[in-house]
Image (cartoon, rainbow, N blue to C red; front, side, top):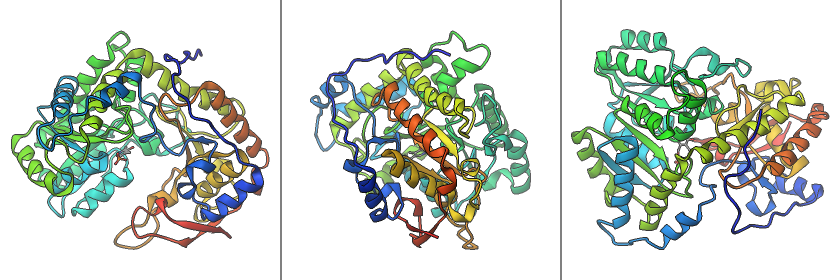
Length: 456
Ligand SMILES: *Cc1c(COP(=O)(O)O)cnc(C)c1O
């Protein structure tokens, strides 16, 4: 396996600091063992998320100076609109402050209370907005996606028979839409194959059901198709991308991931009536339809970033740098979710901490221990992130109990990945010292962001 050198050189740098272990212990206690509550200045290598942590290019920074900060009809809106129309192929675009702004709008206009939304595994904010608007979310991802050690090229695929059964059981009229995520964040950044997208389209079209993509990591998904799906070996990323979206009625996008910016998002669609409804709503939550909560300069940076993300050298390095970290951990016997996905390496906390029960929050505790041992910040993606069932108040018990090491785009080098791997390998050798946690403060929604814990 070869890993390509960074396809960029560094023009501006930020200094990193590493606190002593004694200081890190104090910091994690005052953060209530929640890595979301650490201050950035106390973190050495920050792998909390790849969201909004991208390094922008010289061209994007130059684009910032082209910001047209008019209240309405900004030049940068038209640049973003034409870029998205060309690359995605959708007719209408509404910018939003970030992905969840788009999810809020789509969920409000496309869901009638009591309907079902089918999706390939849930995402936290996406499901929140769907449920808030009265939908019941049904996971129709293939079974293997819930198995950390099942090695498959397209673990994010929808199980068509699950989707078909749902349509038969509930009736097509009671399905608001299919929400297809490319790639699937919660399954470990696993991609969806083109043949699956095509088949989902064919099945839903027969029943008159709409398909909206969660396009957050769509460029990474396009790379995996080129790498793994027969017939696409030599297809340009932009062509793969275009075909992917030809099977959708629209999409929500978090620009903070694959648009290579620090803030932004948008909602796309082809349906004129839906667009009309969205335009009426966006002014309530985001702003005028031509800025949607963004400055003109943000839209400019997003338009430029989207094109940069399509460059083969960029996306190949991106995916392979993540894989480098995964390969290194795997070679040392560390249990990870396989195969390694597009944006992160997920540690399998069930196998890392076999001495802890899921109710003892093993992934939460592992993330806290990684910070104490290494200064690296990761996040929990397990029982804490899953939350509780609204009806019963019971904790969801996701099969995947993981810690996510998420790699920001164009920010760190392979040497940083070595430091991360070495620290985790050392911790693994003393893993029986990792203790269980319990909540001392539990917010009602999206609890993982601000919850606090103590050792049992
Ligand atoms: C980040 C993310 C979102 C939400 O986007 P924000 O820009 O953070 O609001 C939605 N879906 C997936 C899969 C994500 O990773």
